[in-house]
Length: 215
Image (cartoon, rainbow, N blue to C red; front, side, top):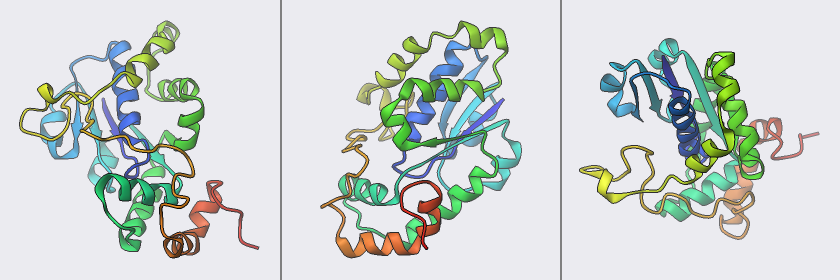
């Protein structure tokens, strides 16, 4: 089984990856391995593989048994990129991320609305479990409270990182989580950038409830 976690950058995609990973572990998935797309060749040799990436990958999309995606208010993504990477807003990057997200959602069995994850993680974990192709018997035996505790308990651990800058198990890296609030962009992202995002991506943002639809 091949599971793809293809969220937008800074949209809860690592939380989504860990939700899938922990659910599959508790569900008894055989020979499981998870990691970034750069490890794809090795990951796909396993009986159960979880591949995390952002750009659209038509080859993986065609192979995948289950695709899961995530999205977030683009203004908050811009703010998170600025906080974490000290990277200013780039219209070209944002355009690529939106295009990739639209392509991935054509294949997605589940699309995580970041803001729902903030308010009710347990419900989101149950929704994710429902699309992972567990048997009804396995689904009935899952302990969702314990699973959520394990997901949220994931930490970056340098001793596991070896030669890479992230935890090899949960893909977290140092300082991974910044201000995760919805609306964290206010008074952080320059007003001209906010206006540009709202104008350029109004259709995408309106359809996902982030802006009122244009009249």
